[in-house]
Amino acid sequence: MADHDDLHAEPTEGFKVGEKKTIDEYQQLDQNDESLRKWKESLGLGSGKTISDPSDPRKCIILSLGLEVEGRPDIIIDLRSPGAVETLKSQPFTIKEGAQFRMKVQFKVQHEILAGLKYLQKVSRGPVSNKLQEMMGSYGPSTEEKPFYEKKFEPETAPSGMLARGHYKAVSKFVDDDNQTHLQFEWSFDIKKDW
Image (tube, rainbow, N blue to C red; front, side):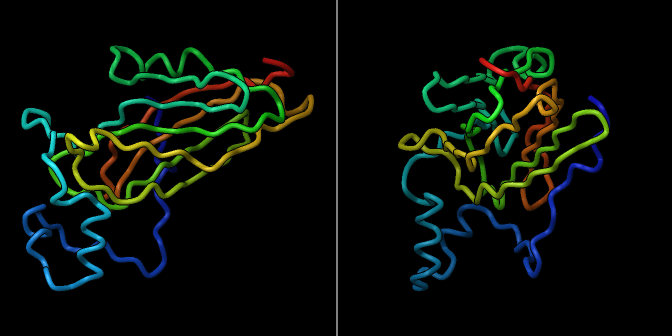
C-alpha cells in the first residue's frame, strides 16, 4: 500500500486519553456514580454475553462498508470475503454528479472498550486532495444481543459539472484514541454525468 503518513487523526483540543482499564475494572468503578453508570450502560457493559473470539486478538473488526444513495439500492461490500479490501482499489464506485450519498459501516468490537473510534479519509484527484475526519464514538464489546454496530456518516453531495467528472482515488482508515489503526485501505470512485 502506498505511504499515507499524512492521514492521521487530528487531536481534540483539551482531550486527554484516559487510563486503560479492563471491562471488569470499568464495571466495578464507582458503582454509586449515576453519570458513570449511565455511561457504562451506553457502552453496553454488563448487558449481555460478549461474543469476542479468544483466538482473534483484534479489538475492532470492520465487517462491511456501504454506500447509500436515495432511490437506488445500497452498495454493500462484505469485508469478510477474501480479497474484498483489495477489490475496493481496482473496482471503483460510480457516483452521479450532484447526487447526495452517505457511507455506512458495520463493525464488531472485541475484548475491551473501543475508545474514540474515528474514520479518516483522504480523496485525491491529480494534485488536489481533500481530508475528512469523522468521530464514530466509543463502544463496548459486541454481545449476543448486539452482535455488531452500524454507523451512518453525514450525507455528502458529489461534485458536479464537467470539471468535477472523472476518477478519484481515496485512502481511508479507522483509528482509535490509542492511535491503533483497525483497517486502512485504498479505494476509488468515478463521478459521472449519469449512473
